[in-house]
Amino acid sequence: MLVPLLDARHPLLWIRKGQGMAGRGEALRLEFTGESRFRDACETWRQVTAAATVVDPLGTPGTGLIAFGAFAFSGQSALTSVLIVPELVIGKRDGVFWLTRVRVLAEGETVPPRHPERSVAPALPPATGFGAEYRISLLPGAANPDTYRAAVEEAVERITHGDLEKVVLARDLVGRLPADSDLRRVIFDLALGYPDCWTFAVDGLIGSSPETLVRVDHGTVSARVLAGTISRGRDAEADHDQAVALATSAKDLDEHRFAVASVMTALAPHSTTLIASEIPFTLKLPNLWHLASDVEGALSDGSTSLDLIASLHPTAAVAGTPTRDALALIERLEPFDRGRYAGPVGWVGADGDGEWAVALRCAQVDDSGSITAYAGAGIVAGSDPQHELLETKMKFRPMVEAFG
Image 1 (tube, rainbow, N blue to C red):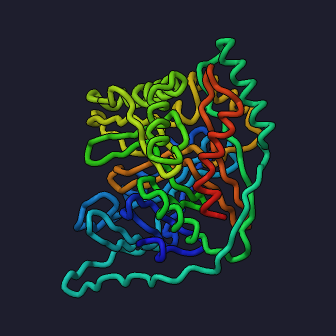
Image 2: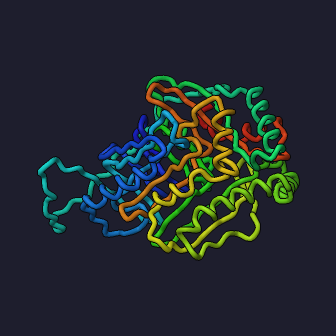
Image 3: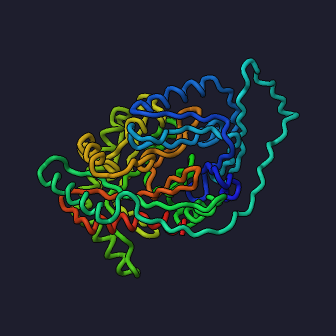
């Protein structure tokens, strides 16, 4: 397990089903703001990798020079977007473990010659026990239940009048950590409870996301689109009925169709061989069923994973349709800054390959210990405000339980 190797206060992690990478320290930190944050990140990362000397005998995803990243949802956000290159990466994939050390040379310093016969394997940092237990209650933030229901009502009215087809509205929960709390406790609970999700920790953004925004691996691009949600049943029969209800729900199927079309449209300029699932399938998580579709193709223009997240974000699954109208309504109806919630989170390698998820089922923890968790629901013509509130409650469950 990689979690015990993390820094207790500043964890860097990307894992799914026990496989992925853990980072320690910061060899390089790159920050970006505004509407140009993706473009600036692409260009800066190209400059960094062009100047780097990389020795990577394994050549598998996640080895060599990598950066962990988390991007703000909006260009107007007060929170910066970051790429962080750790000083040390501990990785595990397909039964293979590796260590990567990164060193930033001082001005005028040259790369020392390599002597393989005298090289010494870098030491693995010691796994340490978790700090004291704590239980945090997350309480309504700027968007309380009444505020949220009113926002949904207004959104449905706008959709009914034909102003837009779908908008995703979120609400927030807030709390505070005790001093010197060990964030690995929360991360461990998420990774253990949601092994099929991407569990991540990047610059205080912590969560377990079921949605793959994009994965680029040696010229192949893939994504998993989620839209449409229902709670799990109390027993096997009820659970089956819930899955069937979701798979036949006109409201959820419409919401899902918008999300898939959004991804296909964004990726089409980069691939001429895109294929999507003909019909969505039901994806089972510990507390929810989701409608899901997989998209895959071969890249035709040499795009990197950073290029593609710039093209994809924001998808209809986290913004709405049409995108511009949905974003304007989100700005007006949500009484808070989303920060990095629903933005891309993941990693990029020196070759541009990488894995990125949509930052869902997550919370941002700042240096003072302040916690803000987020959850949203897709609003379409048939949405009921109380039902959408309950959907956000279900989506808050991973973070509420992990902190509590």
